Image 1 (cartoon, helix red, strand yellow):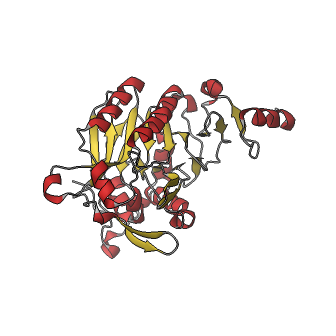
Image 2: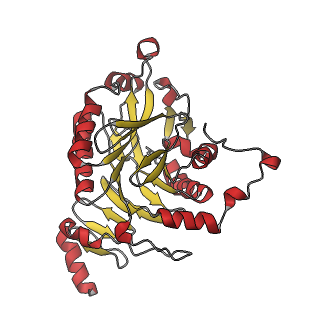
Amino acid sequence: MTFELRNHLSEEIGFNLMLGFIIRPPHQLLSLLSCPGLRIPRFSVLCAPPRLRTMAVSSSSWELPLVAVCQVTSTPDKEQNFKTCAELIREAARLGACLAFLPEAFDFIARDPAETRRLSEPLGGNLLEEYTQLARECGLWLSLGGFHERGQDWEQTQKIYNCHVILNNMGSVVATYRKTHLCDVEIPGQGPMRESNSTIPGPSLESPISTPAGKIGLAVCYDMRFPELSLALVQAGAEILTYPSAFGSVTGPAHWEVLLRARAIETQCYVVAAAQCGRHHEKRASYGHSMVVDPWGTVVARCSEGPGLCLARIDLNYLQQLRKQLPVFQHRRPDLYGNLGHPLS
């Protein structure tokens, strides 16, 4: 395809061409899914060039599971947030994904702790029922990255859990993880955050859950700053680590990609990070840049600005070959520095 023709296609669908990337309308995407990383900016599809690898991989890309990573701008309007997420999930299903990831606070981002408590629901509430029906409708597994959950202790505490929920393609809840590290920080230029004002830390980690894409270890946002958690999950069998997030505008440019790539490299896992983006209301904005990182530390798919989704294939043969050729877990020295990240029981 000539440069002039590519520019013409770019102008037709309102998206700027980047560095030889190929753009196609969504209805033509299924013929292009051999690409390891894809990005959907609204109604167009970006197909990234194949990444370099350190070894040959025997798996045909046509056989590899495809995952979708959704990026949204949640507000206090729960109904509108659901409509936005549902549109992306249906698009992910239409494009052939087996699993879609939503970010932390996909249900809403409130203006203050009182509004957070008021808008929260139990897992058996109306909102999760809507996502249950959506998973069934689409035949898609869902990672609901951070649900404001009224737990069984709600009446006593009047506080919630930040709960990461996995639904299978029949709409059943197959895993829940309640965020264990709460973000109580004061970052100059970003404003103070006191998650503990409305949220209780979860009591435990959860064992990785088997999905069509691989064994997923569950985490949420601020958890990525604690490598002990990721080490525990990988020693329990995780092949994919998830960090659904709502990163701030100051910490995001400095730490977001660095931390995600570090977690991927040190655990030799895929890392999937769905993120909030843009301005949620007058008090809060998020960095965005949702991405998928492979076990070598290469970013294989990413979103840029604004709501949308990116797609990536998960190659577990590549993961196993890398772990075999670079067996860092066999080389650990707990006799010198202890067992960082004890295996889960």
